[in-house]
Length: 68
Image 1: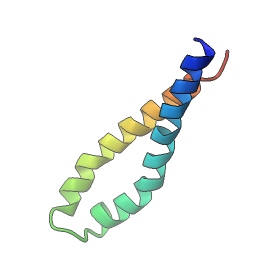
Image 2 (image 1 turned 120 degrees about the vertical axis):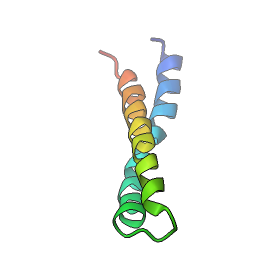
Image 3 (image 1 turned 180 degrees about the horizontal axis):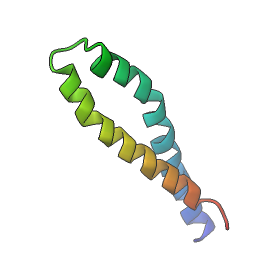
Image 4 (image 1 turned 90 degrees about the horizontal axis):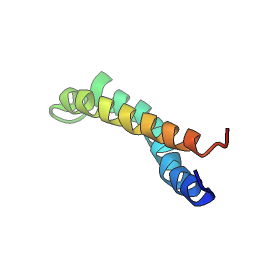
């Protein structure tokens, strides 16, 4: 992997790893535990795997930037 490819993977992977982590607790609290909107639990249960997949992808891309 070239330096340019590592930089690109990091710039894509870092936000994909951080943003789902920051969104997780408020989303679970306000959509699943104490739903504030109609169908909040259904929306939260749908979005939970989507956020998990985005976080996993971000961590994977960020780890690809490491030179092993």
